[in-house]
Length: 323
Image (cartoon, rainbow, N blue to C red; front, top):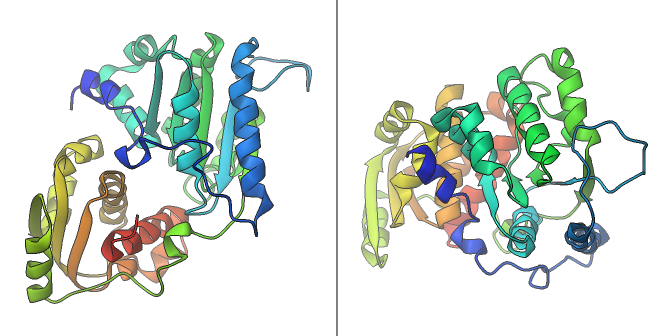
């Protein structure tokens, strides 16, 4: 994808086209969910006041923070709230995953990215992750420059901003940049159960070859069927920003011969691919190891644990037919 195509695609996934704050369904057992809705409403109301600069020095409490950060586990509705916030933002605005924004910088270059995004009322960043020092400093600088021009920032993540980067690189060496991000967001904690698993028990559904053939035949629309190792090889050959084009128009995908992953790079690319399948709500039918067992125990105990757990949650939903 060209930089212009990436910028044009920075909108919420189609499953969130109609997301509103009123359509968010808080779990009564977790009051933080209702509180999160009200804090997002308050953030929206703040558009009538002068936004502060995200990285400027200020007296604590002197003005409303220009960033809001929705922190919580998998399936508590963070992306729904972010999409609802995006829909309420005035004027030009952008919504994308962290990897899509870094891909935009890679395609356009840093300065042209600033020029493209400057003047937007809102930059919404889903699945905010800082996996290496370069991304830490680049995103810190990018958000600082955009907010200085009045753009507001909203983000979601499974990791509190003062813990970004833990377990993946020497975060202490970049504490100043990470702290700058944390200190300038209003942090909203959202507790709760994964809604994708409230009605789905156990693991991802695995079929035999005949079952995959029958399931794909029943799908209305375009489908594809590939071997797991062939899929991994193809994912390694292209940039993750292009995965969205791979799944464009697909309604179902067959993955045959799934095995437990042992290579971290393969696993991270597969996570990015699963995210795009989930955004497009592409059904998955697979043979071999159930897809919720595709990440080994060593991966689930490592620095990318939360990424893998998020992917497992989405794989369970996509193989069960639940949204």
